[in-house]
Length: 309
Image 1 (cartoon, one colour):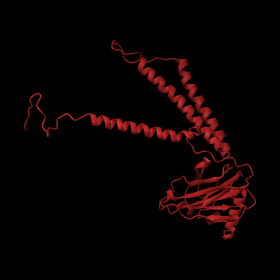
Image 2 (cartoon, helix red, strand yellow; image 1 turned 135 degrees about the vertical axis):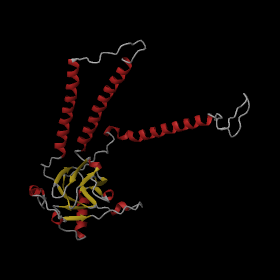
Image 3 (spheres, helix red, strand yellow; image 1 turned 90 degrees about the horizontal axis):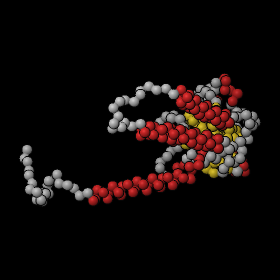
Image 4 (cartoon, helix red, strand yellow; image 1 turned 180 degrees about the horizontal axis):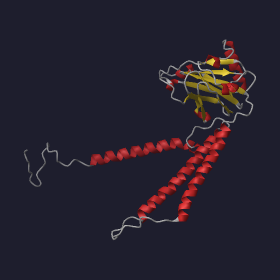
């Protein structure tokens, strides 16, 4: 291997890879990158600021949505409070009890403080008990179906779309699988669930084939749809508007396209939509007699009928 030597002060040759590279350009590049990242972070945070009070959840569009929001925000406040306390104590111990230059012995390896041990046993148990209480309370509220509904909709999940049976009105909308091509307007072909505003709606959830999950993010509530079983929950939509719905349970090849629209409208618009469905010949029900797997005996009483719950 050839060795090269250079006289002090002699200019470096162009092909010498050991030559020091200019630092100014690199410094500018790093500064630019740092400023760009900081700007993007600030932009992202400013975009999230509007929903910070809701714990970055969608704004609740139902009467019971506030229970979910409050439970979510309260849980995060408790978790972050504990985290800050624990991290702070860890950092304090690392700094206050670090090894000193003049330390010649190891510190005591075993030491007991009974009051302290009781404290850090009782406090976590108490916090978990409080969290369990509020979770159980809110879950019971969200799944309560004891009140008489104004509207009953049997939502049937199938690969990979939805059927909406308006039980009392004896009409339905049959959905077909979405063809999402990326072009504008594709959402208009999705099945659309119409609901009247400020009316109690009961969803009766069933499945024709595999496990699905009925989810409208703006309702802050979802529930599984299991073949042979019947699940129910009630909501009171409080905001007129259009919302997105989807399947929240991986159910096969086209799970991501198992979508639907939700329109919360005035009562007059809701009645008009039902009349339009009947005018199209959609009378009766696409009910659970079409399912390959029949509903279990213990759930037979949950199947809705016209004029009943």
